[in-house]
Image 1 (cartoon, rainbow, N blue to C red):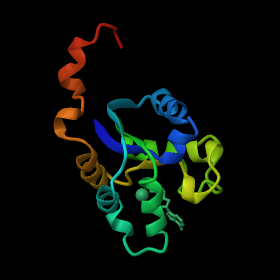
Image 2 (cartoon, protein in one colour):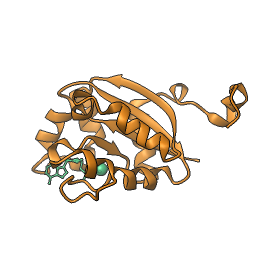
Image 3 (cartoon, rainbow, N blue to C red):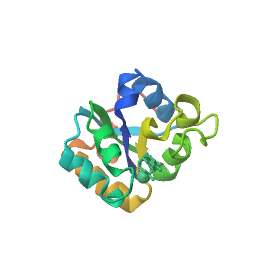
Image 4 (cartoon, rainbow, N blue to C red):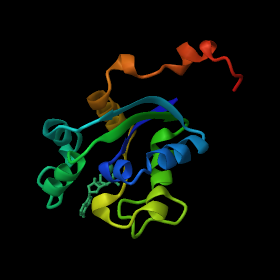
Amino acid sequence: MDRTLVLLKPDAVQRGLAGEIISRLERRGLKLAAMKMLLVTEELAHRHYADHVGKPFFVGLVKFITSSPIVAMVIEGENAVDVVRNTMGVTSPSDASPGTIRGDLALTIGANLIHGSDSTESAKREIGLFFSPGEVIDYTRDIDRWIIES
Ligand code: DAT
Ligand code: MG
């Protein structure tokens, strides 16, 4: 089963859209494997967005992601990386298709609500930045504790 890192960015939390976005991911069939609220430090932001260092929008991006609390999640499911990316919509909300999270709920690239890892390699690296292994639920180990048949 594939895993990916999802961040609900400061705009999602400030606008009260965390539940709506989580709900869309859950209804898609994806599973929450970890979740926490946190304030991203400058250092974590630099590590998370290492690929974007030096780009013109980097300073603004770090300022935004560190500005107020976010929700970080590990999302699990078949092809989780691609399915989350497709459910999010493309980076610029003005180009994102209706029906996607960004296409329905956002308008500007500087406040596009959600981060999703762009590959399984990125997902592994990014999950490690936000969660220790013990914080991520292992459904194969924990499923026998469920009291509701799924
Ligand atoms: P995504 O979040 O869709 O993976 P990305 O990894 O290319 O997009 O960029 C990370 C974030 O940086 C993106 O969500 C918003 C911001 N960003 C990207 N390109 C930008 C641009 N041209 N102007 C302003 N912000 C940008
Ligand atoms: Mg990206």
